[in-house]
Length: 343
Ligand code: CA
Image (cartoon, rainbow, N blue to C red; front, side, top):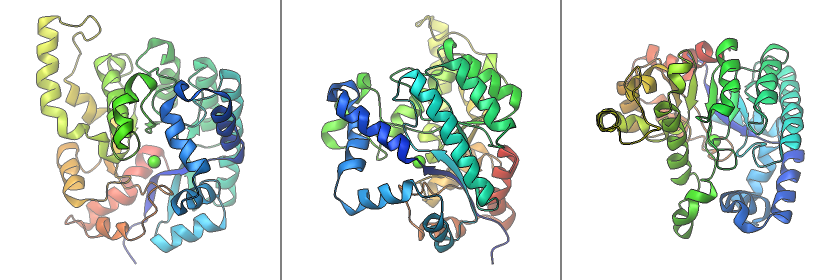
């Protein structure tokens, strides 16, 4: 038995109601409305491939099969989050009511399996006031551990001040917001599609890294200095970019090149080190994990599997075998998540 619990911190689920909503979007909107959504859920809902069949079955299960899969991988606990794009492709009214309903459902599953599940709250950025309210309800009344946003909402990013009520709520509740990827928006996705690069293979990281950097350059963390953001996939590539982000941001500010990229109180990399936490979802590769621990600190990196999209029990061994101390392994698998999410 290892001297730690394995908490997997980016594990996806969804509901039949949300998937039915996706079917409706697919059948009523033109393909050009959101090619990324069509690529993602057009595939997973309609493909006869084994991967899609397994995904469709596993994603809506919060019962026996999921727990058996966790047991088979040595995962003690999953932090559940509503799979991308969550409620963010629906009209505001539908999105708000579905976020409430899914939060109630995940809270129910957690009540049934309190040692195996914890979860983050979905909310509808389409209605920022309702989103802030739902985040508060989900944390205070349902015991969820923070918020979850599946990156852009119909091409809009949270650095837009109209969304900042959500950050106000997160900061005052002292809970993190996880920015999980989704497909790039219509304005971005064109060149990704022909070579299959729009999804988790690369496009997700490009889009979500952009989202995080828009927030940093947009001064979100000067306005909300205690805001806590979580990124998956080892930070969507950003840890590798610290030096150049700092150098070029300083150059941009000095030259007054962009009205929307003014001076910040800290260096871009400072925000990425002080306001952000990172999970290893889908990135069980020792050099990359060690690099992130070196750059960000042992306290900032948490284990995640990315179930059921990357259900790969054998990958747990990669993390188990990291050449770090047992104490640091415990931080990675357990302690950092317990501390950040209040598990
Ligand atoms: Ca994921």
